[in-house]
Image 1 (spheres, helix red, strand yellow):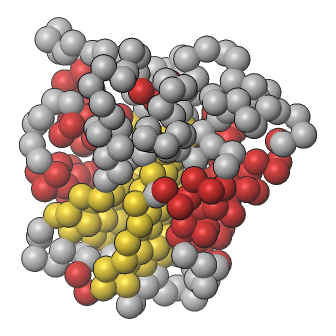
Image 2 (cartoon, helix red, strand yellow; image 1 turned 180 degrees about the vertical axis):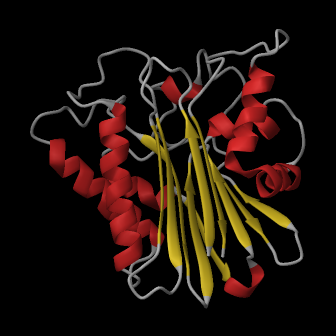
Image 3 (cartoon, one colour; image 1 turned 90 degrees about the vertical axis):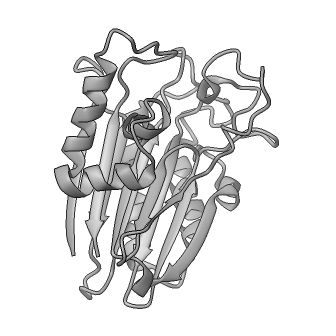
Length: 258
């Protein structure tokens, strides 16, 4: 197995709210990856005394430990338990019912000699490449399916659609949200490599339209995660970029050759 990770903050004066890991179990067989994109609250009041990086580090750590040590659990069960564990750490000090309590998007994958399992929640993306080179994107498209006019502002900050039926879901403090994730399993023989990305990196395809997911995978394969992020930053620096929310966003890319 070979892996490469790059994570770049959206602005040098702000902490990077993304989180990523790749782990190999003690048996040396298989592996796991975790990519989180912490959701920046639009205002300081989110009912929590902790920062978004505090939340993503603890959720990411729990996901890494559980996905690498509990093969009998499904990825949805692992996400549910990780959310519960993280919530328990600050339940007594924070208002976890607040709609903007610290939260994150999730990409989780686990592979063995038999299969590759995956889970995606919210707008981060996982790409699976077959031995023949075909690329399949695993996406949670609930944000894209919101009715026109439902977004007076960036949907990720809109309390009328976030973690609500008919809207979209993120990993916050409710373990039940794990059941909303996009999940699946494919034979290991059908997957040569994986790329997981937060939406600061998926802009290359989703915002700038520089190529489809197969083209995006090819950039990472050739130039590495840092190369894709550098391309996104160059496009964001263009005077023609009419950004709606953030000119630059935290961007994380993980590339694993199984």
